[in-house]
Image 1: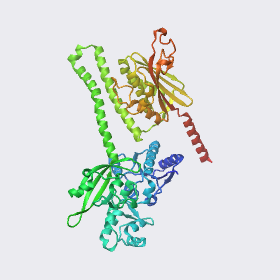
Image 2: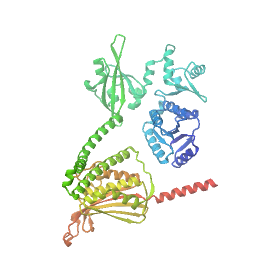
Image 3: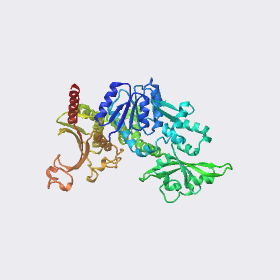
Image 4: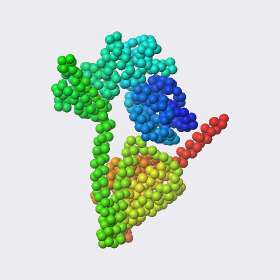
Length: 587
């Protein structure tokens, strides 16, 4: 079923361009011009993603954001604006939007944000959310307000018309704020037979349960049921550890916040690892608050569960990254700093020759480039995992824009290791790709060839086009790759060898990410070769007498082949499609 996308923007050319592009991709797109219709669509949950333009002068649209989020807090909102002020961006992000994009609008950027927004929305059990709308502090319809107050819709409507009940009318429909209704209810609680404590629990976004001394659940709010993916009839009267931890036995008393709360007679907080119905771990902060009677005796405990899995994983990742970065930078920066510091000493510089100074400078430059590549590869890897890496394809000249520009970066290092790069171009010299990403991929391949290659050898860089595919390969003689590792070396943090070699093990992983971004692939080859022929996978496969011919010994090699579509076929289809649309418009 196609996703429904709503757009609210006064820029008609921009809206027309977005609608045309999204409709071509199969989305159902609707333009909305007024807030009343927008709120009707939001409350009826007919929108999957909202694209909302917010300008500095459009104050009413900024005020719409919290109202929309209260009505449907799971609705992803993509905000666009031509105002690049930090104040606007901060204010909009604080209101819980999914993505903020500056004008002029980049269609590819909007499509990527739209895809990620839909993936996130559909993984949050949309069917269950639809069954319990308005479970948080949100905007309520007349029917929801009537059900909450246990009063007929006619009575609620009458109170709203008289001004006795806080409400706002948009078009023909009444809307109510849950928090304002609760305040009103407090003043009229004696006139209505309803459990006010339950209402308070329902206004909380976090999962809350009320437990007795035996750890049985007496009551809970809807957020608690949703977070644990259970129904109310299966929770009330059940032990808390069976619901939250999916365990048959209670927690040890020392780590059970509820029992500690009863024992210490004060609030207790701890972290638990809970499991959902699929067995996935969730790192939750559990807060136990005592509920006391007039005599000060604890009768129940209010347990609040906050799922901090995302924050926990982020903190864990940042701690690991910091340790990893410090470990890798220690030796790299140390070598560069020692060399540069020595060269700045005029007395020391006079005692060594020009050749030695050049070698020290080359060594420092190599260390700094290694550090630069490490940081760059980590950023590309992180963006690839998060789905935020954007491939901006355009036509470029392979030899000038990619190969020559990349090889120039390694001029000093190649000279230091007495290696050269031979470039061969076969076929068309143009390529449809993201030149920045392709240069990074080629840089990583050449860097591997230098690092694991043999000094005084030639690195072969070959580019060829065939059957709508572009192939870029890098060949070098060196330590080679074991046959059982030809696939594993593209995994994260995997290296050829750790003996005397520095590096992060991210270079080839980034190459694979870039290839996949271009709808392509990368593969590794290795074996033995004599005078570049024949190429075999194992030394035992060498031709009889080949090792003795001309006193030549077989040498190991490694070759990486990076293959992506040329883009010519796709471009022809797009041109043909545009021509068809033009012909249809003329008719």
